[in-house]
Length: 363
Length: 84
Figure 1 (tube, helix red, strand yellow):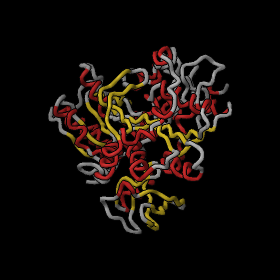
Figure 2 (figure 1 turned 45 degrees about the vertical axis):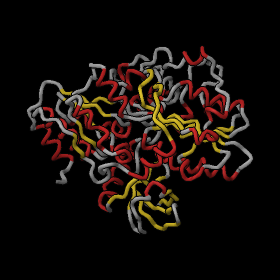
Figure 3 (figure 1 turned 45 degrees about the horizontal axis):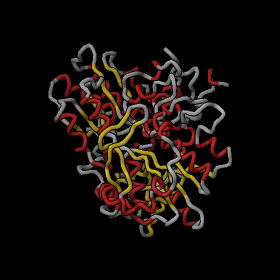
């Protein structure tokens, strides 16, 4: 059962592949492993590996980043966020405060954190000072946020929640009639929390081969082999190539925490628009912890309409797997990790950042 | 952001566990592991300070190899044409 990466590669090369087959992944961690291990170069030329919607920072609404910046600048609070969020720019002219990092430079009390527990501990240590936790993330990250709320958040802790569900973006692509991929590799740690069954619709409703994958090259290659074999034999099913961590039903305690504290609502994805039932919102019983209700919105209608990607930036098309990072006109010249224009060049999960960090230049 | 790493449980106190991986120790929450009893010596996958799944020792060790690779391959963004 436990084949090495080389053995999986040999099996893939032995398959009777069509002229072209496109495998999409929807996890920045997958894309990072694929790129770091150089898997694209090791696979037959017919196989295209497409990074899809796998970066929660990249799709976090511009309005939410703006809201967080304004709270940090105008309110007497400590604002905390996962490190990636601090450098995401909003669509404001140069010279204005365009990121949380710049808000900190302008005197705002903005701090990066690595865990929801840090936000709670900070609030406990300073009960007199409000702490606003700007929490973007997919299910894997939102479940720990839900745990922190369910366990009992301090009164002075407020959540600016931008949690998103992964599968509705894939459903949207498939329902569009032009999904742009032939096979799906489903995210390992999202499935650890939510269960692999969430991805059954890809097979059942759309007849697309699917496999849940882990992050080492051997489990990724096992998943590629599985979906390719499903594809060549026209026999799609949902495979689990990460069974050591992904169990049927996911993590029941995590799903319970999510159900207890949050509801699933229609949500905006930056540059993409509204995707039905794709976002998490705090339940009304937790309204006293909801920063959206406890602080002014600060964005007027004109700003809300500005909530797109920056001018000239193709991040939205990159997130949807319609363009490769290197297809963007800004990639590598006007947009680099040091001076990012779009969120895909900021986040460790963004395809542009991952490709640039691996030394991929413009093509 | 959805990457979890394996660590070994060193001590447990209520919903908090002291966990260790490759010489680094961290306090992590067990709040999401309420349906799966854990003991000192077990391995768990940790994501943003929360244990999200129990794994075997062999699986934990194979994951560490991957993270070593990723960490050595990506320090900071390369300088290249990236300079201001």
